[in-house]
Amino acid sequence: MSLTVAIVGRPNVGKSTLFNRLAGRRLALVDDLPGVTRDRREADASLGDIDFRLIDTAGLVDPRSDSLSAGTRRQTQAAIALADLVLFVIDARSGPIPVDGEFADLVRKTGKTVVLVANKCERGAGTAGLVEAYRLGLGDPVAISAEHGEGLADLYAALRVAVPDKTAAPAERARAAATLAPDAARAMRIAVVGRPNVGKSTLINRLVGEERLLTGPEPGITRDAIAVDVAWAGQRLCVYDTAGLRRRSRIAEKLEKLSVADTIEAIRFAEVVVLLVDVLAPFEEQDLRIADLVEREGRAIVIGVNKCDMVEGAGDVAPLRARAEYLLPQIKGTAVVAVSGLTGAGLERLMRALFAAHAIWNRRIPTPALNRWLAQALAANPPPAVSGRRIRLDYITQAKARPPSFVLFCARADALPEAYRRYLVNGLRATFDLPGTPIRLTLREKKNPYAARGSKRRKA
Image (tube, rainbow, N blue to C red; front, side, top):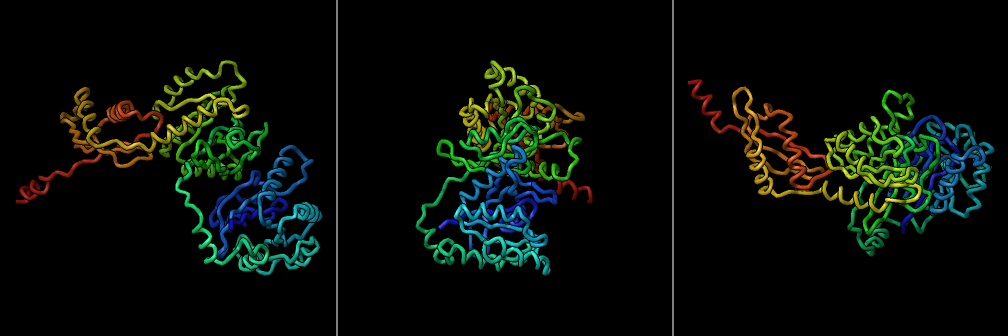
């Protein structure tokens, strides 16, 4: 008895605000500028005891205005086709305008169940527009304020009336859910990041097998992080398309700052990050900054060299791999894969590298093996004496995975040189086959059991 609901309407009527309100958290970017949303975004949402899949869409616009508008129109029409119920949102303060009537006709022709939502009705505002909304021929308008959370009880009642078979009582839904097989496999979370216009959305469309995301020659089409569910080789994936990251000095507009924050949040939420670089200009300074950000967030990383169909011989990534080793020593051994989002070349290799990076990121190493390695590392290269005193390294253990994190118990942890710490990290990476994943090494001093006894003697 799953229910899918699409939110549609012209730009700047509050669709994304309503989406965030029903989803229970800020997922979609919201701004006073019209046309912020471009790709359709999906999330699990609820209203009272009604659970449903919610789709946010771009504002319905004239597809003849430009290619981008035509693309957003197709995305909205695809969302309507997927939906069981359409929430048609209007601005009650301005009232329905002629374009609302045109779009109401478009939605009515689809034959979908429609609930007319009059937004921005906080504190009694929009009464005149509420009356005029009847002209759209979509039934009684439901007065709400998505920003302030007003009128949601009326919206709940409208949903129950509109789709009674999909909004059954909780006890009935629980009985129906009990008959379904549990989905034990959790989706692997993957974020695709990079500079603007390197082909992130095109690559994800190729992976999905449809035009799920807007693409075009203009940089900056993607504004917020969009999650797309994909199945690959029996594994469920949740792939995040993100806005391109430019140098901080070039980011001036508020909307782009919000997009950057959304991209960083997607990186933090991901398990594996695909850093997509352009084969025509690989490993620019901004690419290195993004890679460093991913490493600091502790995420597994795979480097995809996109647009390899545009350069002859681009499938040979050995020079690029050597360059990555030199420029990114903190994630030494990262997989570098030549790929074309346009043709699909190299996509299989990229996915194999993703699964391998995820397995390494989750790897656990037994404590005995770690301490045998530590003994060999100390014998080959003992830590230097600092201020004439030897630094004693006692034993090591793995505290957690995701990413592999180790605790080294020692004396005088603050005196261990950074160069020797890097020596240990590189040794861990090489000995236990941990390429391309961040490694965390924490130094912890053991308590001196005789410290208290010595202080008592001094007092005496």
